Length: 124
Image 1 (cartoon, one colour):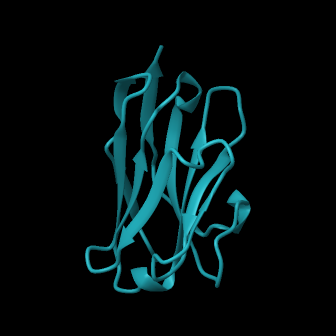
Image 2 (cartoon, rainbow, N blue to C red; image 1 turned 30 degrees about the vertical axis):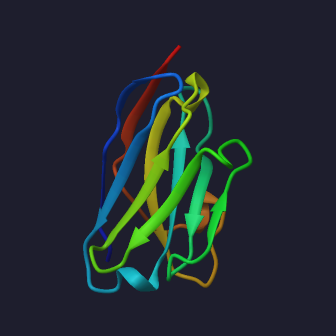
């Protein structure tokens, strides 16, 4: 069982930055692939970024490539999402997720554990 708790959301102006954190419980954090998803009102949950066990490989949705960076610190059981050059269309609830497996997936159904989400609002 893995419990995930996100933090770092808030209100920011367009062009600004935020850093989201996701703290995981358990002693097997390094064996999980981690991902970030987001869901805007009236829209489906969508993949944002994923990261390999070691943190060496990151995967990104086209909409955030070059602006967002995912990273992890296995010693701290934490995964991060650095978001730069934020746009109003990035406004959503951001969720951290964990999955067993050997590669990051952009499909929400393939993730086993989810956090409660943190709101990110980008004003124009």
